[in-house]
Length: 390
Image 1: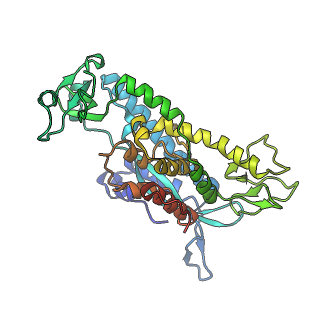
Image 2: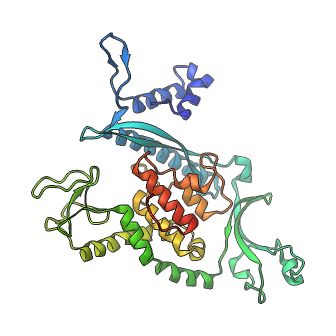
Image 3: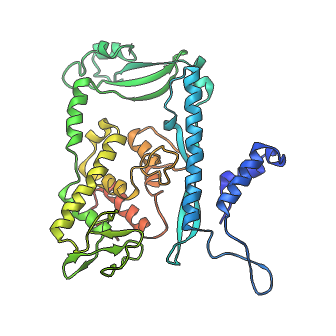
C-alpha cells in the first residue's frame, strides 16, 4: 500500500520527531490501523511484498476507526462552538481528504481493490466568525442590466433581519430579482449563503418533492445497471460478490441478493423465488428509502429545478452508495459526506480534492464494475444518455 498523503505529512512534520508528541502517537495509531498484515519472506530470506494489505474485517475495522475519529472531532468542534456562542453547522465543513487504495482479502479468497475514505474538518478561521457572533439575514439581489427597473435596482443589496419583512417576490412580471439567506459576521462579511424561497413557494416545492420518483425509462435503465439472476424465468437468490445463484437449501452467503439489488435481510424468505412482477414491485419499495434520502439531503429548491434525467441518475447513485450519515459508527459515508452532494446543493462550491462535479461523482469507484456504473450514471446526469453500460 502506498503511504497515504495525510500520513506522509504527519511523518514529515517537526512534531513527529518528538516521540512524546501527539503527532507521533497519531502516526503510530494510523500505522497499526493501515498496516495490520504480517511481513513475509521469500525463499532467499528477503522481505516479500504481501499479496494483500488487509482482510475485509480489518478493512471495515480501519474505516470504522477513521470514521470514529471524525465523529469525535465533529462532536468536539460542535461543543466548542456552542460554548463560544458561534452559530455554525460543523458538518458542512467535513471534506473527503483522501481515498486510500487498499488490496483487500475477501472471505472467499479473492483479492479486491477497495478504498478507505479519510475525512477531515476544514473549519473556517476564527476571524471569519468575528467575536464568535453571527446573524442570519435575507439579502435582495437585482440583476445589473440596462432594462432593470428602478424599483428593483434600488432594492439591490437591501438586508432584512426578519423573514416576515421580505417583500413579495417577484415585484412585477418578468422580475429577475432573487433573495439569499445569509449568515454574516458582526463586520458584515458573509460566512455562508444559500438561495431563499418564500414560505408559499416552499410549500409548493415540498408538495412536488414528495411526489418525485424515478421515471419509467429510468427504472428500466437502472434495472440494467443492477442486473439480476433468473432460472426458468424466475428471479432466484444469488451471491452479489460472484453473481452466481445460491443452491436451494444452502446457507445464505454475506451479500445474498435477489431481484434488482435487494439485499436479503434476516427473516426474509425468498426460497421460492420471485416473478418479474414481484421483483419489480420489490424494487419500487426498495427505492422509496432512496427517494427519502435525496429529499432529506438535497436542497429542495435544487430538486424542484432538477430535470428528470438528472434525478434518475442521482437515484441510481444513491441506491448504490447508500445514504451515509455523520454517526461515528458509520462505515460507508454514502451521500451524506460526499462531495457530489455539496456540488449539487451549491453551484458555487469548490473542492481541491475533487475539482469538478464529475470527479466527485466518480469518486465512488473500485477500479472495476463500479467504474462502468459511475460512467453510465454520469452520462445520464450530464447528457440525458440512457444507453447504460458501454
